[in-house]
Length: 193
Image 1 (cartoon, rainbow, N blue to C red):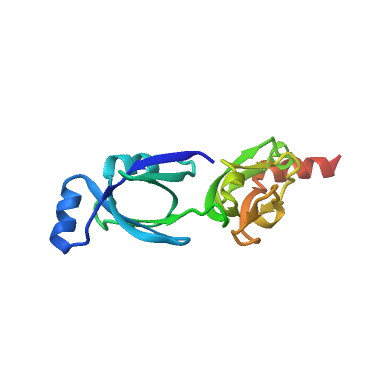
Image 2 (tube, rainbow, N blue to C red; image 1 turned 90 degrees about the horizontal axis):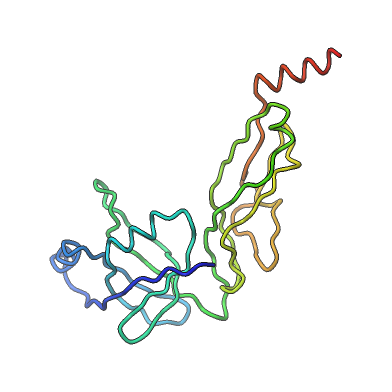
């Protein structure tokens, strides 16, 4: 999995006024915790955080402090209700000895049998949650739809990858081929022959 580096400047806890000053300065308050690490309050630059949010990819985040670095994932993010700007980020520390749970993008490959028959491919999810050790985390989950027939679906439970466990519910529909008028007409023509 790719790593995105964020520079982190230490922060002391203060009142609402100090947090507002931090945000006016183009920074976002954040905290990293979990997996046996001490809680660290810090700030990250808003423009750097926006680069992370704008990408459809999933990343492990390397938080770069003055004296050390900490690998983490985004655990929770709060947004301003009007401007939709991030106003606070919770990072979860990544451990070398425990699996990481993260949402990974789904990449659809192949040309479906059902689409060739006139059906329409519907992709329901763009990311699925998986659990794996950090060295086994995939950049993407490749889903081959070549054998997907008309009216058929691929669920999260149908997908299997080496050293990766699916965390998303097994019944989550990843993609499906829906029948269309063109496919119904083609089917009726075949039956008439």
